[in-house]
Structure formats: C-alpha cells, structure tokens
Image (cartoon, rainbow, N blue to C red; front, side, top):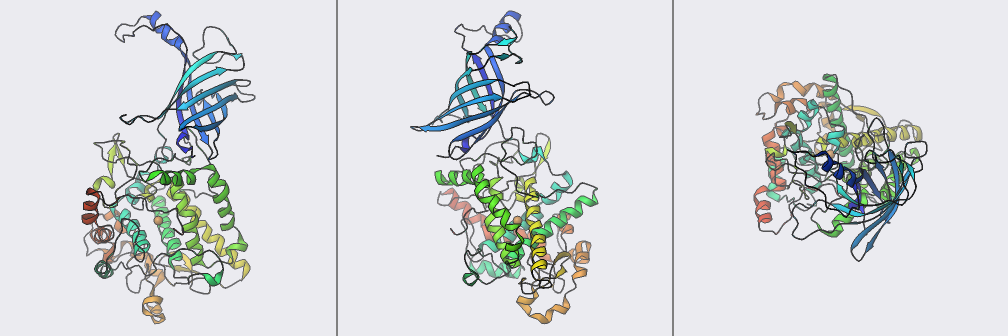
Length: 565
Ligand SMILES: [Cu+2]
C-alpha cells in the first residue's frame, strides 16, 4: 500500500464534544454570549504536515504558533489499511526547551472515503484526540483556566491544504519568465527533446512518419544523434557512443548560460544549483521551494499512481538517489565514463527521476477555469496561447509543469536540478584530468565551454538544433561532412550571432526569444518553423480526433521513470 496520498499539509481543527446545540450566529446582529458558546466549542487549531513512508510509518510536524512565536510538536505514528479504509494512529509530542515542552497528544483517525457522486470532494481525515499529559495552557482557545488537564477528549477534522508551489515559494524573476516562458523557448525545448526521443522509437502520443522525417530534415531539424538508453553491464556490451548523451549535457549547459547572461544583464542574482539533491521534505509552507509535492492519481491506473508515489517517497531518495549521487560525484567512477555515457546515465538514471519527484498536480492555465486540476497535464497536441502565458490573480501566469518538456524549464526547480547536472560535467573533467592527464582537453564550442573530440568525447559539436554552416551552434561537421569541414568552423564567432544579421530576414513572432539564443541565427529557429516541427511530431489533427473518440490517451508526461521499459 502506498500512503503518499496522506503526504503534505492539512488544516487541523478539533472540537470539544459538547452535546448541546449551538446558537445560530447572525453576522448582522452579534450576540456576545452566543459567540462565547461557539468559541468554547473549538479545542485546537493548526497545520499538521504528514510525512509518511512506503511501509506505513508516519512522521511529521504540527504547527500551531506564528512565525514570531512558533509552537511546534513532532508527530510519530503508523498508517494501516484495514479492509480498504486507511486508519492513522499517531501522537504529537512537544519539543524540549520550547513552549510545547512536555506536551503529549494522541490521535486516532481515518481518511475519508471518496463519494462516487461527490463534487470536487476535498480530502479529509476525521477522528478523536486525547491530551495525554497535563500542561500549562498556552493555546489561544483555552482561556478558562491556566492548566490544560490530562485526559481531555475532542473530535477533529483535518482538511487538505493546497501545496505551496515552488513558483510561489521561490519564483523566477519576471524577466526570466518572459524569456524561458516564451513560445520560442518552449518550442525549442519541446522539439529538441521530442525529436531525439521519438525519431527512432516513438513513445505514446508521438509519431514521425517517413514523409514527416523528410519535411523535418528540410527544415533543418533532423536529430543527428537520436537518444539511446545507457546500457548496464560491461563496456563490451555497451552500444557505441553516438553523442546523444553529450547533446543532453551541452544543450542544457547552453540554456543555463543563456539564463546567466540574461540575469547578469538585468543585475539579478544567479540561481544557485543544487550542490546535493535535497533530502526529503514535506514542509507546510515549502519555504525553500524544494518540498516534494504529493503524488496524485494521473488517470493512468493504480500502477501509475504507485510509480509516481514511489519516486516521491523518502525511500526512493534514500535508496536510489543518494546512491547515484555518490556515484556521479566519485572521481574513480567518473574517470571510467566517456562524456557521452556520463550524459546518458545522468539523463536516464537520475535527471528524469528528479523531474518526476518534484512535479506537482498541474492546473488549467485558462483564467476562466482557475485551479481546475489537470491530472494528466497538458495534452501533447495543445500548444494554444493559454499554455504560454495567461493571468492568474492579476499576475502573469506561465504554465510550468516540471514533467512536460514544453514547460519544465519554466519551473524554478528545473534550474536547480540542471545546475546539479551541469556541475557533474566539471567533476567528470576533473576526474579525467587526474586519472589520465591530457586525454580530455577543454575547448569552446559554439560559445560554450566544452571539450575537444578525443578518446573520451565522441562528437565535435553537440546538437542543439539547426546549424549555420561553418558556425558551430549545433552542427556536427564530423558526422555529416567529414573532418575537412573543420576549418570552416569559427567557434569564437558563434557567440556573436546573438544579435547578428542572420536573424534579420525572417519572421519573428517572438523577438525576445529569438535574439537571445546563442549562435542560433538559422531560420529553423523561427517560431513558425519550430511550431511546424512540433506539430509534425505530436500531430494535433490526428491525435485530437483519436482522443475525442477515446482511442488514445493524450497526456503530457514526457520524462520517463522507466529506463529499460
Ligand atoms: Cu531539457
């Protein structure tokens, strides 16, 4: 049984078990005596945050105070499935040398069932509570005497509170959202991933026919290094390096560099990479933005929910992520990997999983239907304006599902986790420099600090999209034209094309985006061209019809947790 559906924060209220009926309260005619009766009915109130484990153990925190004078208790307990009903038994104990020192409460509750006919039913837990230790009374609602007696029993109701999203806790600056949230950037990220992921082995929702491939190739977007799984086992069993792993590392390094440039131009602070993958957190206010959002039913069955819940669990972090993190920081291990293998392993074994672990239930960006949950996320066929930028609560809103390549880079966690990925490249370089000096050499490629082709580096110029002949920026000369083309490369020039003439003659629906792309003056980066490529991969006409007839799921989940599925 997976208990992640209990994870996260709940508004807790307990009530004294009074048998008498309470008076009606008329806000237009307040009777103090009636209000007094009501106030004596409420026993306690606060925010309880549950942190369940997959085995049913429960820890957490109960917050009752304010930021200035916190009043916290720690929770410990267990969760049990009894004939399909989820029961929870736990206690809250005060913290030594804080105002709650010596407090002890015990709780017995159950998760309320879903009513088949319920409308927008809010998750709730109901139950009974007893005060097990007498204590000095600090609770605001206990004003009758100054001692809270042991043995008092009350009934409680807990109601799920909305998860505080990373975009609220650690918002990206508006200047950056304007750039990375543009149609231009969304399309580039989505088709770059979509082409290399689906060119050879199309996944659900993607379909690239031979004639599509011809058109995509004409538009300059044929991916030279389709994605390939990293192979477990010995070096002999491995697929030969094709450069896809290097593309993964390089393209995201280019994105990071572009953002750094924008931030420094605006005098804004840089976004700090994760130096280590954050330990499990389920904080009620998500202060650092890295609390793991709860799992939800994505509409793909019980197995889908369990898969999501496991990746979000503490156990996953403890058993899998910390192990991989140690590996990817271990110089001995890194010195055995080519750059391509490093990229492939990071992408498939840990990067995809970080995207999934920190993703959150998406909501409809349409201002007409605010906060309507979208369990399956954006349909792959949908790229209308509401998925780019809308307004919510009077502020600009950019759709930012972390588990969708059209929007993941608009999510604040994206830049932390990709910063972590990017730092592993430097660890890899240092490991090789130490293990076999001179076999890996640094080289600037397309304006990006990179590495020369050699025994551990398989391609000259990683792929980011259409290349301008002879100007780097993603063109793999070695593969397509042979080594003699090398003397046409002018790496140092490539960066200078950001505001260059190449872009001038074409249509630009999105000027801000177009001009910021390092070394990309090719007409293939026009929004209209990228939109065409997107539509060729994800087929709005055909899949929309199929979805309407119920034959095909249109879901946006694009980072896969399955490596060898
Ligand atoms: Cu990406």
